[in-house]
Length: 455
Image (cartoon, rainbow, N blue to C red; front, side, top):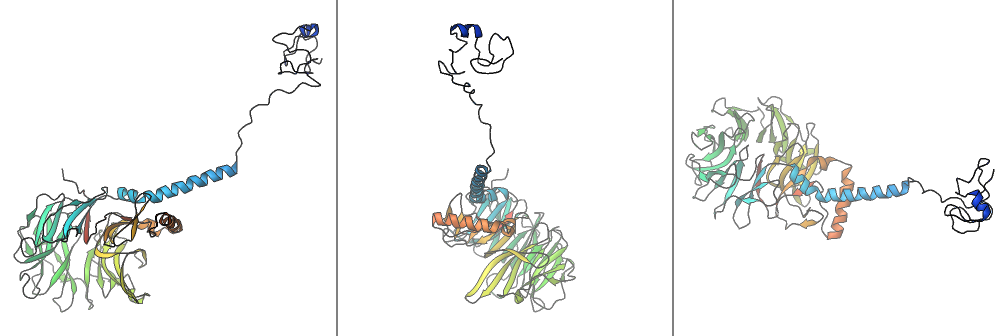
């Protein structure tokens, strides 16, 4: 049976059509009802003229379709925005990811003062305020005490204070010119260099060890020669220093109680800058411009670098071990036609060097296995979607070694730095470098404590 209104097939003897809702009896009698359209009306249309098959019902809502091109464009835009945000936020992220306190020498008021900067802070804390020169800071391993050299009372002497600048006191050390303070790793002793003749007469410096309060000073070198550059072993039981008692600069080791004094190696070339590895297994030093590593007893000394064979020729100085004793941060003086430039690099165990960046003399420290803090002279640096220019004075800088050595980041970083530089009319910046200060610095030390007042 066919419905005379919508032409839909319906069962025989049906009183009406379920599809269009017409009642056949009323429809045949010409009696319109609310449930049935007029005769000939198309289903779903009031009073319409149905010709032939009635119009089909309104089509269902179109189902969701995956559009690859739109998705690709959206994801690309999100990736670009995320990359720009990460690149611009890197200074703050680097500052937060590295912990500890940097104490550095600043020269803001035409005289040198000491400042402390916790890496989570934005501005350093001024520790000293004196017309005298305050230099050569040494920070205890717990980050609570600072020893430094000052001539505020005439001759150079060593003073001690808390890292917040309180409790300043001169240590009762032997008479003479006392310099180069260095805390032991356990914080219980202080090594220093003393010249009993003061500023008059030939230099006759000797290496001493004293208690943390400056008492019980012990002369370790016992020589008329010039002894300097003390370095502690990680266990605070032994020291290394440089002496010319044999007519040339040579490294000697001695126990902290003054016993077992002996030269480190039997080499005939000059040696300097001793540095014990954190694992207590090796000692690094400089000889003839190269980085050498030997056992604690001086056995098997070998050169890690070959600066004399490099082009341009390079000379290395001041090695500093990484926390895991696998690498050394070193300064490298490179000879160019126009003069010499100083760089900071990381030397691996096989002698390869990486993460090279321009630097200034004045100290270097590993914050962890990834970050190094040092003095640099950047032309500009990043600061949250802007590039800030600097006056050219050395600044305390934080460098990410991992970011500097990841090759896949370099072209992206270079492109992003170029884009930001184009917008701000500033020079392109090193993406792995974060500038921590803005007023200049001359020397620095670091410890994992905080620059805030101790509890």
